[in-house]
Length: 160
Image (tube, one colour):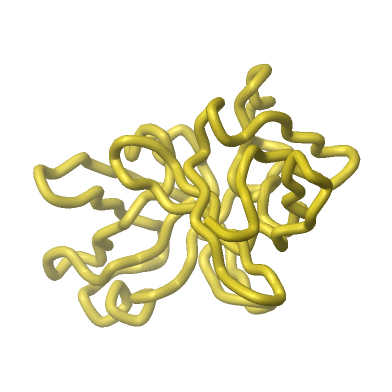
C-alpha cells in the first residue's frame, strides 16, 4: 500500500509514499502492518493528513521523531481480506505480479516483476530470460488478464 519515507515533525508523525489510487485511502483502515519481508508489526492508525507534498500519519506507540525515523523504509500493508473486491476489468497490482505474459504468437515474454505508474498509464515490467520489457497497461496492448490461469495475453512482440 506504500512505504514510510521518514519522520514528519517531532511528535512521532511519519511521511508516507502511498501506492494507492487515492493517497488518503489508507486512512480508511484502522490497523496498518509495517515491515519488510517476514518481519511485520501491526500499528493502530490514530490520525492523518494530506499535505501538499506528502501524506502524513500518526500511529499509536510512535511518540517522537526517533520512533518515526526508525520506521523509515518500512513497507505499509493492509490484510487482503480488508480490501474491497476489485471491480470488473480492474486489478490489484499485487495480483498481477508473477503472472506469465504471453503474446499473440504464443511466445512467453516473461513474468510480471513489478508495475509502474507513469502518469499517463500504468506499465507492466516483464522480466524474461532474454530481456526486460515495459508494456503499457492499456487495452491496445494488454488483451486479456486471466488471474485464475496465471496469464496475461498481450499484443507485443519479442523484438519490441
